[in-house]
Length: 66
Image (tube, rainbow, N blue to C red; front, top):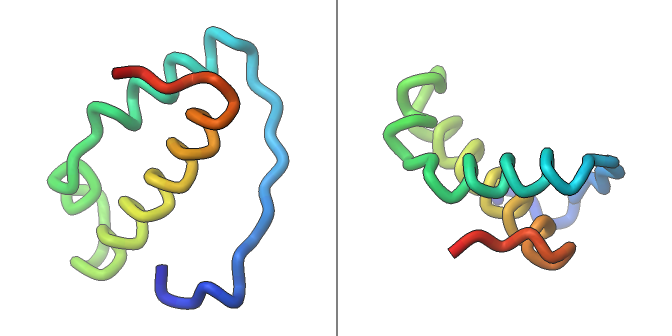
């Protein structure tokens, strides 16, 4: 993350099935997937970092695929 001081809280409600499915998606997404959709290498890394943060939040909520 480029600026830790500007964290944005996000409140989201998902069903258990949605949370599990998205956690699975994040587990399988690779940096190349973000690179293919980003405008720059830096943006791809930011996308990846955001996905990691969301994945950690899902894991804390009990949705941590192995």
